[in-house]
Image (cartoon, rainbow over all chains, first blue to last red; front, side, top):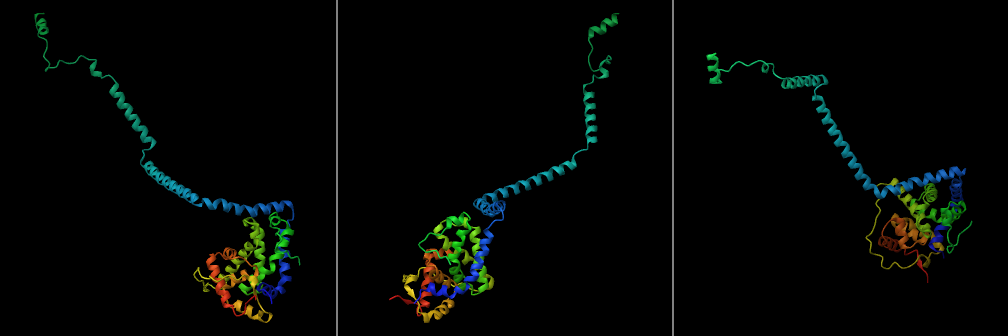
Length: 140
Length: 183
């Protein structure tokens, strides 16, 4: 009498030569052509695994950061569109210069002494004169 | 063929270091049980050989993912099991993997070394085994071929231990006529 394991293995023992061949093929792929190749394969076979191991625990943090960046970019696009629109209504440099000159002229007019102040002003009929002045003139 | 006795420690640390000789020993130890397990699940010779080869290649590539050296066997069978699952899905999308509720199998006690099969019943044993559904067959094969514990089978098949017990109980019950208890 046999154990179930022995029954099963005996049933498939005919496949051993093929399994030996597979084993040899896999082992042959383990032999590096050169030290440099071995290091390259080791580095590249490990990198994705460790890369994944590093990223997987912090995937939600990265998602949040990405969402924040998207929001910032969207807000920037919106404000730059508004600035562009405001820029379209801004006066041209020539207009600005003309306005500046006009302002300067007005300022100069305000600050310049009035030519009428230098000449004796005509007596104002509404302002009463000094009586004494009129009588002295009359006596003279 | 060099056979490593079960009491000997497998050269897993040397395999981790990339020694081809260590991998040769490990592959020789597991190639036939692995092939027997895979073949009884997928029932196709060339597919089984391909799966065994892919399992070996994956084992070499991802040996760093093995946490405990003494669990190398169950880890290797776990890789092979996943490849068999992919094969099942490729073959039939409508296949339903039947499962009973966990919590049964209160009388699951007999170990694999206590069950014996007469020579004249070997063919019937294999026939009965192949009539089981895939989950039951998988659990029973792992139990027979490598004498994995319930916990190890649960880890290999990615199920609960209660589910494994239930499957083993059902599978052995279905094969009760063939498998005889040791007197």
